[in-house]
Length: 306
Image (cartoon, rainbow, N blue to C red; front, side, top):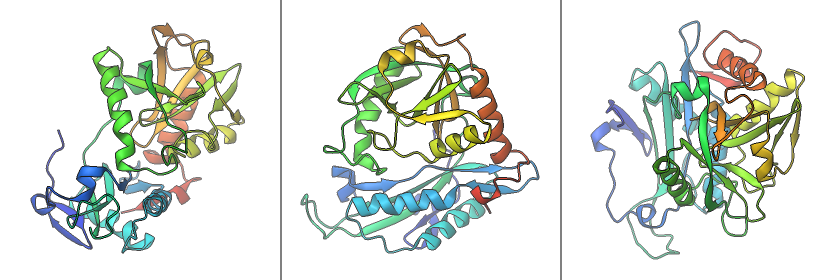
């Protein structure tokens, strides 16, 4: 359950947490046309709080809004400032931020441009999305019966509210079936992504991940992982991955703002590698957490201090 804090940024100003409400007939509540982001702020080794890759997240938020034909009344810099304001107002040292741009109350016609475009940024406490044990020991996944739609059916490069219904259903089915996460294939049967994470496969010291042209969200943590792995001299290839290649992989890991770098130890009751986080995953985790929580100064351009 989300712990109540003091303030939420709504349409240009900080308002009390309980005042950040909208009408039950708000357009997005019924049809799902809205854009959102998930962003993390971390307390680093020196005690300062830094928001990770804030600029890239806000730029994607604005791109998603453009895909949704929503004219956002705030600039990138104003939205970045709003994120910092929310962290400071709630006196948070580490937190998860949720910006949302949506259509409010005005009309419920599918194509109506009457509903106002509303903008909010909230933050709250959130630990490891797939659990602390998941980060350390790895998680169990299943291949979902739900398919990640191709780009003629959904806008895969947008982080759009309504498009997450399939992910929610796949995730709920995975949990009910005794797994922590679901992995989704595309219409051609290639590996796509998790319900809210990108996926990487390691085999014979080569790391592969579906390309940006696939039915995936172009994840910001995905991009981070690719850069960090290549800095370590790892051969990273963006290419199609077959379902059965997951089963015989040396390592599999998921990336995302919420999931961070989470190893996968089992898929469809098949042990992956040794059934634990492998060396490539471990080194990547160490590099990532050194940036967001430690003292790595080489990647300060990814950090925005509050």
